[in-house]
Image 1 (cartoon, one colour):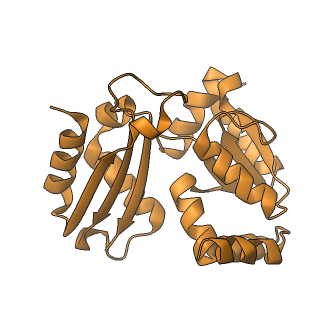
Image 2: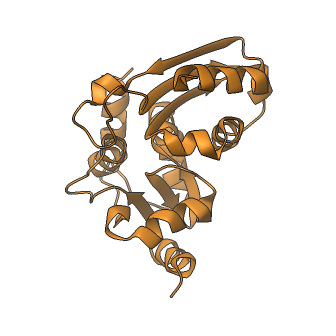
Image 3: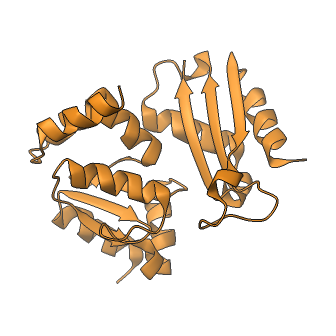
Length: 119
Length: 85
C-alpha cells in the first residue's frame, strides 16, 4: 500500500491523529511532545503515528499536507496545523471549538487550566 | 550568508514586514535532536506584515514556508513561527 493510501486510511479511521516524532508515551522531539502533551492533558482520545518508525510515512505525510514539518495534527481527516498553530489555538480556545464542532470529547476544565497557566 | 540573515532577507523581500525578529535558538537545544555544532539548526521567527491580513493560520505558515523556499526550510531542523498582521 502506498504511503498516501496508508495516511488516508489512518486519518479516516481515527477522529484525531497526531503524526509525531516518537509516541505519545515517549515523544522524541520537543515540538511533538508539546502537542501530544496538550492532547493528553485535555483528555483527547487520539491515534499517534511515529514517523521515525517509517521513512515512507515521514516523507509521505509532508507531501500529503504540503507541510514541511512534524508534528501534524488531523481532526476528522482535515489537517489542522503543526506545533505553533496548535499552541495558538489551544490558548485562544479555537481548539476547543474545533473539537466540539467535530464531536470529539475533551476535558474543558483541563483546557481552561492550560489557558490560566499561560494567560 | 548566515542562515539568520538568509531568513531575514527572504522574508523582508516577500512581505515587507513592519516587524521582523529572527533568533537563532540553537544553543538552547544543545544535546537535543537536530543540534549541530555552530548552531543554525533551531530558529524562532516573529513577523508582522499587512500581507497576512485575512489569511488563516495555515495560509500564513504556508506563505512563510514558500517565501523561505524548500532549500532553506530543508536545512533548518526546527522553525518556530509567530505570524501576525
